[in-house]
Image (cartoon, rainbow, N blue to C red):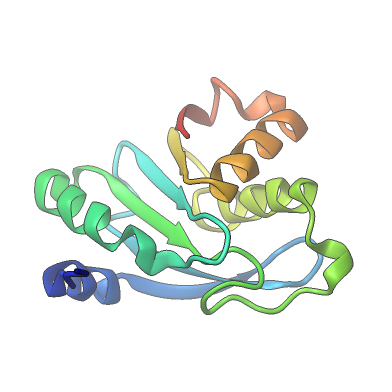
Length: 145
């Protein structure tokens, strides 16, 4: 039996929504909670055939425990949720890694960041680490896969 946590859904929907463009022009839908001045930002990257709402229980829990001490960011991967539909040739793990960088450039331009990925989201983060090794240990403080 599936149980819907309406508190989690309300928390998810209360996040500030925006859309950014990736380096190849695909629009990604992003939601944010907490101030940009928080000492740490956590970016959530979901798995294949999922969307930002996948993280609703985790986001609700973390918001209730951390409040504004930690900024939370979640985005819909290309072709998922409210993000744009990309051309088929751009649906690669390398591109997903570049999308992570697009999120960091547009939404988290400074400060330490923790990247959290589930399934394809974890592959996106690993691809990002391979393509942007200079970010590891400087801007990207940690990853949870």
